[in-house]
Image (cartoon, rainbow, N blue to C red; front, side, top):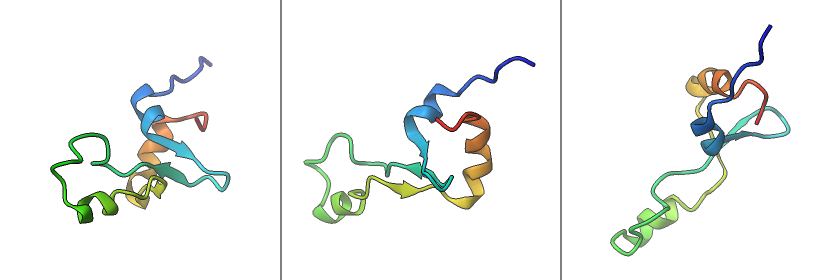
Length: 67
């Protein structure tokens, strides 16, 4: 059976923890920070959030080898 390919876009956005949870980075923290309020910037400050349970099955298909 051939190897499965890892989805490169998902690899850049998600990673697995030691307990097999899917970790993600919050959005809206990359650019144009000068126009955003302090509250908006602080809400996205958590860089290690966990993916929602409803999308974990799809992410695991995109990352078959636990990248």
